[in-house]
Image 1: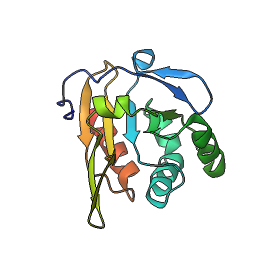
Image 2: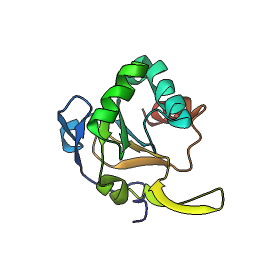
Image 3: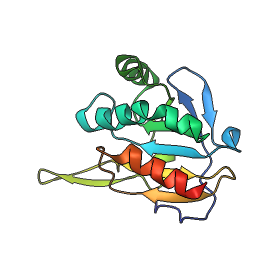
Length: 156
């Protein structure tokens, strides 16, 4: 599916977190949400991205923002990844990539001459009212967290 347009309501979701609880977008109303889709737990780029969000987490808390990482990995995989890198925010299991599809973050990837289907590294900044404020496509893990914080500051 295509990425929903900025200004439109963010697609709703309910996914199981690394802690076993269900996290829903509807339950986060009133807070800005940073929803980032990443390909796979404990891989180099995904680790850089997650650890940057971890290192900047106090700034997200100060902004009142909720950070959520989403990948097709299992809850068990998320638990290990979170523990290994001391990640302070929930990782959500989208094993059937249903939510990634709804956000347009699942599609064709081209690497080493091969075409596969998978997560397209994309981050969505969702407003307290549930509307999409900003979409970051083709995310580069290095510096991305600071880019998101800058966007959050610009919106407040």
